[in-house]
Length: 276
Image (tube, rainbow, N blue to C red; front, side):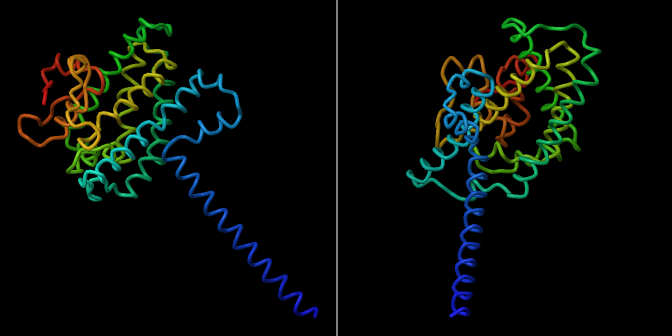
């Protein structure tokens, strides 16, 4: 009888251990899922019931963070519905994604902090965080982005870092995740240094970076989500997905054009602007 009880206890313990392992596995999958789609923070806010936090910077980023992954999902569903979905069009190397999403991000954050620490004391003037200086700050940021992006196409070693992003043959939202992990740190050194030296407030810079990152992902929208993507009169002011499709194209007239991200002012100044 004792031996039978021991056997049953052992079987129960084994089943419990397997259940815990399964739960840990499912929990890990859930964390990866919420991490990719970026709604983990939003779920935490909703669970806490502190809805006023949605009006804070943390709340705004928590709401907007899932936007691009959600649109990517809609794009894939529409492509499948219209029988235009091909796995190869959305296939991003897992190794590339992991390095870019984790290692590259950590190095990039470190580079931004380092550049602020090194150059803030040498800035030509100090700006307050007001709406009119925000406009100035965004124009300077767009200039710094133009410089980084132009060099990434024109200097061979920098093109080696950037070319991964131009490797996919089809334009869609998954392309925004196709980056070599060392490109972001190099890009942020250039962009942060120029912005800080020209007086952009660090707090303002982080807001600009978030807006820029969100729009920079959105302009990779493919035809399965938005076919024309010129956006009417808006296309005269900002760079649209249509403009960025031109940037990724290999037609001779389109190569090395539309280097800006949101405002097309510097492409027009330096004569690299090209409509579709």
